Length: 455
Image 1 (cartoon, rainbow, N blue to C red):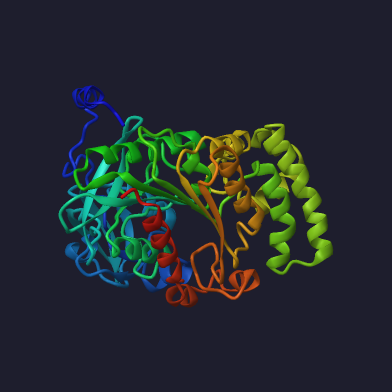
Image 2: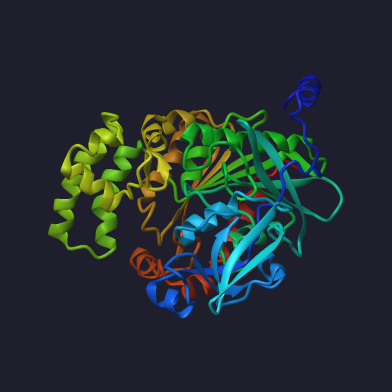
């Protein structure tokens, strides 16, 4: 744990932020459901040319509603900038914060409207089980948002510290049917402090670089700062902090350099071997689960091996790989090459650093109880050997501290499924996701944490 002198020095340096501080304003909440404007919508809206974004729905209590925007309107410009696409418009709005001025030009039945107002903040999370605290930790030239659900009852409480997967999405106010939200609410209802940490640029977080721009170790640093900040809360039992790493979070969790050891570390749906090994196996097995023909899969697999070797082992940059037509085709088809150094939504250095991390070494140094969970319905982190390996490494260097468990009928998204093929078949079925969270996972986690709490 940090000494009092270190805490005082941090406060003098401006890094000690109270639990009620609001350095970060809330992100903008325009409150519209939008569509691209095609030629037919442009003609219907009597526009001078195709452009803008079509307002399909306006959310009650939103900025758009307060400004008088209506369903059927076409937003022509926002603060003087004409949107090139829905995604571009949304990104522009995300740069605004609560209280910022906003001016819209919109067409309604062929008439041009001029609407002005102030941006409303995104609705804050609420919980029947806890009070919700919005705080922040420093990140480079800005801050990353932390969201903490603390029990209403007095005293110190154990902590469930959540480290999410690799995608660049906000953890703030997730939809009511989100499986992650259901997992965290289930833990919160059992009396635990639940901590979520926004990645760079996600939600309220503000800095000159965002999640897509930063590398693996930059991101681990955000989670480290959030974890170490737990020492300032009087409702946190520092002797009973449990870190839960989901997917990529299970790789990052043991890499965190913390001021105090967690009591336990839980990982679910993750990887222990070097990234090259995992991806080579993944491309053969996962595509078969997804229904690809055996011979087509084998041909594609050979291409995959060539790409992964050059990219991860030889450390070739995207611009080098693009000179090879085969590699360029693979990057575009399978790895979502977006330009600007981005592959699969992250900067290419993120993936190359994954290959250079040493998960075996990281797990050998973990001085906590470990629970390594493999969902038997996994088609993402499909190999139970990864999770058995984590437990074996921990127990080799810290005997008796790790447990490996298979979780039946559970997939990567914490859904109840029959098996991996079933999970793959419902991966885009929003209705299934809405109603099939596997609540038994909550009991499994709580029971294990209660068994390993320091009394």
